[in-house]
Image 1: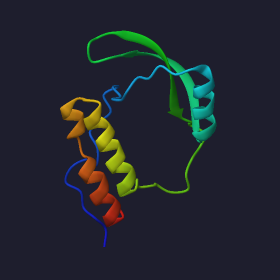
Image 2: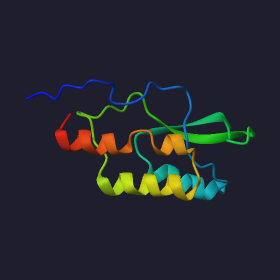
Image 3: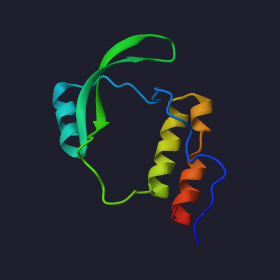
Length: 110
């Protein structure tokens, strides 16, 4: 039986990404790049909550890398994302923006 949704699964993308900006050595960045598959590295200008701007190397999903089906994140992964957002004082509106819906939709197979 298909799941009927009355609202979009996720808010429309507004061009903003929430996260933590780290200063790492070139050696450590190269180690991260080896561990992260399916991404390309891009240099972007990022703006922090206090309106400071930085040039940063970021991992962006590779548009050529397609999964055979949608992958729902595990509870363990979502818990770590929530914990990191809370521990790093990310925008409360972002923290309340649908994490539980991701979990529920994953269980429903939607």
